[in-house]
Length: 436
Image 1 (cartoon, one colour):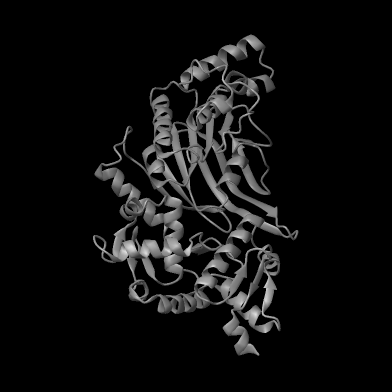
Image 2 (tube, helix red, strand yellow):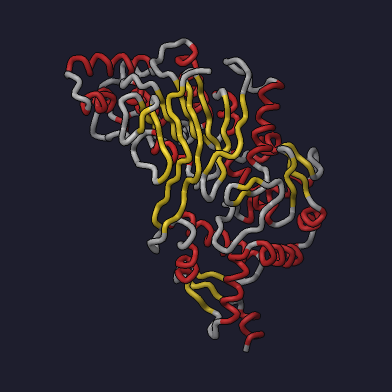
């Protein structure tokens, strides 16, 4: 077995919520990155994947457990580890050449040597001739190449890529991914291991030697799938499609709590995240699923192609449908339940009523908002009241997302209304009249 480069042993990390309470982002994470491998890490937004990469890069410390590099504890940034960010993170006032030289300058490399090494990295990544350009003069793909060149110029043993292709259009991302793999396979990189965080299941299968699936709340490694196919891989081959199906199956297996893995859905709690799926997307997905060629059951990769949804969007819609009991997930397939089929074929008024009952039964946050409005004499409450509650268990962004989804779902079910100008959630007039 190849030598371990980075090891995580029972690593945990917490951050303070807005109200000052500690919120566990990572818990009991065990992972080893070895020489000669590319590993892909998949998980839902907010599962702690980016936090994990920052721990491995030495940018933040672990609260519990150990992070080891070459068998030694990692207490800060290491010379042998470089990171590529999703947002490019370039200095807009510096040329391509100067952006790539920055890390070398920070390490005290003499000007002549760092200029030569930067030029070589720029040429390696396919940007020769653009050394004097500013970031604003480059396309998104070219800017990301600068970010990759800036990481590679340090000649790292370990390259960490945090959603490095997700900000690019599909074709540009694929081309850049293929170029990185070509450099890896041709041994033109000094890099001995790559860890890729991604939302794209096909990208993970095309690149990696193994895929890790991360669970949420708190983040931890839930499943691992080896990818035994030689590179380069044909994305249309049976082997690749079968592995993509397998990863979809792992990504959509039931909910987990406190390290326990279950094949059945665990009921939501009041302070849990909600899937980022708007009603229009849910309805559109159901309409595609109910009709031919799917007729109520679909392979997730195939319906993703049909609907044009990204993996991130598809997984959120699928989670919403299972939460509302309109569909079930089995081994990478999604199937309408009788209730889901009834919903999609019902008249609009009946759809609203069905949806209302589903969210009241299965989404505690919506039920809590409705009950609070019914108990308040005015029937009007400000959204901040519910945000303060959610901040006990979620960070600010996730709290806002959960409330936004809850409000939209509740409005569709005619459970309450929302004033976007004032932030007031209130009962509908008919409801108010009933309370008088």
